[in-house]
Image (tube, rainbow, N blue to C red):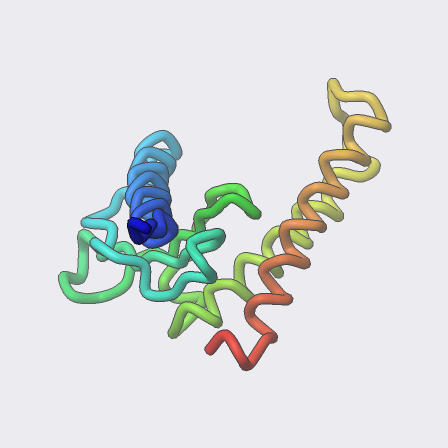
Length: 140
């Protein structure tokens, strides 16, 4: 009987390659002045969430930004000044998301209350995912 090779590592590598491209495109679309996104994530959870360093264009060798990508979260970033490592970046982004989720309630908006609530709930869910990952010592 022939041995069947698993595609999981190849699939994970492809996912990370796509996530890196997404990170670069996201930064570009948002007008972020950045150097280069790391070739590999500095941390990943089975390729479902990955943290990337982004070099500073003003201070070569320094982390200018941390970008979080993945299937379980929307691509987003925080300043390199907000975290010293990937775990801190997850926590900083979760704090940012929670403040955004709170901001959407009661503000003038073209969206219905149900749409705002759903959006806010989605943002809170993403923040919870990031905090769960950051707080799980087994992953670090």
